Image (cartoon, rainbow over all chains, first blue to last red):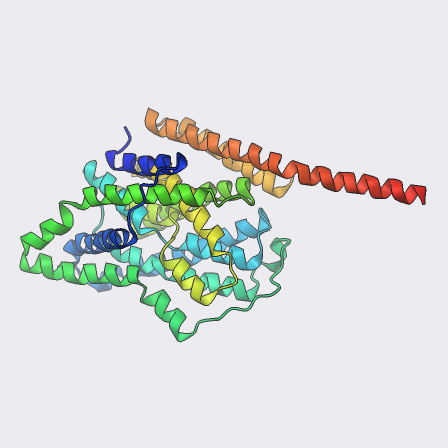
Amino acid sequence: MLDAALAFFVLGAFAKLVNIDLRLPAPIHDAITAYLLLAIGIKGSAALVDSDLYTLIDDILLVLAMGALLPLLAFAMLRYFGSVGQVDAAAIAAHYGSVSVATYAIAVAVMDSAAITYEAHLPLLLVILEVPAIFVGLWLARAGFLKGLGAAGSAGLQSHGLDRETLREILLNKGVVLLLAGIAIGTLIHGNGDSALKAFFTEPFKGVLAFFLLDMGVMAANCARELKQRLAFLVSFGIAMPLLGAVAGFATAALIGLSAGGSALLAVLGASASYIAVPAALRQALPQANGGMAIAVALGVTFPFNVMVGIPLYLHLAQLLA
Amino acid sequence: MDREAAFIASVVATLTLIPILLDTHSSLTAALVVTLSVVIVTFIVDRRVRRPDVGAVQLCTIQSQSQSRQH
């Protein structure tokens, strides 16, 4: 059975295809995004109150390695199979090494509905996975790594580089700050037993997510229309990469020793592609890259694929592997 | 078969195999079938869009060859 919240995503996408504008006003979209980020942080902070962060160092290092490996894999595929230009391939690779909070939120909602438990420090890993792919993407764009794999060259590359503004955008973007703030404030909420605030950030979560998905459906349908060039290859890449990312997530989860629920969530993180934090950082650091193409694949292909097919598939696989 | 076509074919093959390998419930199978259809239709549309370009290139080649023979 299709999760009821996902029906809102289908509604938004369908409405866009028949030219009915169900897009939410930008301030409402921003407010809902902020709510979801804070709620995920607060939700995840519950078990962090009593845990020792030093015990998580191994997990964090392994997840960092996964975050660095995924863009390398994406870059190699884009260059070797699609002959995508070096700068554009590096930009798309950065999107696919990073994560989508919306996809994670949907996976959490689906797992909560099915009463599947998972480790509470997953939101922390979500925050950590936001960052390394951007650095790897910038390095790939500049260094000409795997240069012989594709046909297209790196002519005309003039990156603004890692200046102060770019570093600030990578490490202190709105998503990272709100998630970390959610975790920090969540430890206070859980520590003080503030039930009113806790209820505000947990009870309406799925309803707000459904409203958010309506908007995401409109945006995904809009982005899919932008995929005019290299349509077949980019659609195939947008489906193949999350499957490979999920495999990387499962492998990392096995090394860390996560539960079935935790493995499924790490697979979702590996499979998802960023369309908020990374585009903002790359606009600053790599203005020559075709950002529109990267967002179109991430939001127009990978996001709907993960929502409709990926999440149930990764959950099923996690239960089989457990 | 070029690399790009081989890649697209392998994605289609993977999507076809997933429901068979997992023996999954019907909604996931249905979602995979829809995704698979999207990939195949996309592939066909993409090839049709590109075909005129290939034809134009071939036509130009034939014309230039016949012109060089005339000269």
